[in-house]
Length: 483
Image (cartoon, rainbow, N blue to C red; front, side, top):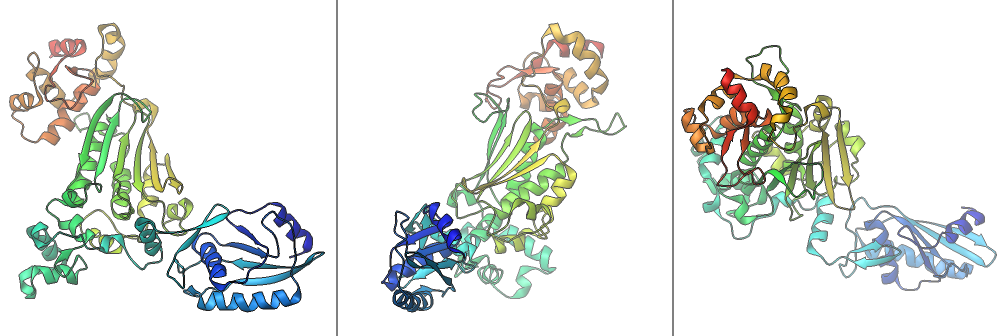
């Protein structure tokens, strides 16, 4: 480094990557500075420069003492040891020692007292919050959130029948054939420890995981408009249960709140989702398996009129960035969970999920929000198939709407129109049609009729109201009279 380069560096002042010291004589103080740089993003320590940027300079004797101090601090006062690089730059006022500390690969680094230091702006601070410590240990591979035992839980909280079915399906033999107890099998598969299920075991095979970890659910909302602060929503649900149940519920929520369009040539085939289901399969599995479980927050699934957002707690781990995951690079944040999810969810663990989602739908935006500590996937909806806000179609627009939707009326919608008499509840409609599958009724009969404006809600502002009833709209009455 040349003197003019050092002058330019000093002129920029102190920040998270630059620290000035007039002199330093204490190994513990130096170790704290080295730890803070190594635990954050690396940086440069300039010794011989005052806090205000004035170059004071060092004598050759000063440099010799500091070199010895640096060697002792880096090797004996920091755990694990680090390897800073120093150089001496001659200035008019004397020598300035430039100590470069790289970003650490084995974080967290601690001083002799076991304290963890990180940079906080131009200063440093001690890490005391348990959650922050856990994330640092997680990044270094020393601890994983999915392997932490769930205090208070036991074998009684596990769905043993589901676990045994999984075991037999995966290992092609009944669990009892091993001669081991369920508790021992769970421990051998890294799903429990000493009879206490860990988070992976509870999420995969627990009877009610949300009782123990209520934040680890999916909050799903379908908004009428395009903004988060919209006053009205079309659908809202907290999705909880085992991980496979949460996944199925998420896919059902997407299925009933996205538009269905006739993509095939056959008139009698049911409509397909406006966005391929494969996109959401990959994004939802990615969120459930790779989210940061050290953060006590839910996954958010939000459907807007122009887009769908899947927001996972925790930014991308370690040094991964968006471009890398688009090309298939991955880092297992929850290895125990991932190893079993391979056999339970549509997950392959090859880092291919995001590339597959992007291949299936090109208008996919990925945002690694490190400041907000979250990862967001935004799937844009095409304008021509975006559902309108209200299913109530007035008589004034009937001439424009009827010619477009009449040819697409499915047999199921026709049956529904014939079954409606006055105002009827969902259950009454299902009974009239002799149907028992609520999901099939919603996706095949009710939602298509609402989307096309043939029927309307009696309480459109409260779609989930227990008093909700459905009746024929003006278009529906006209359509029914033709049949």
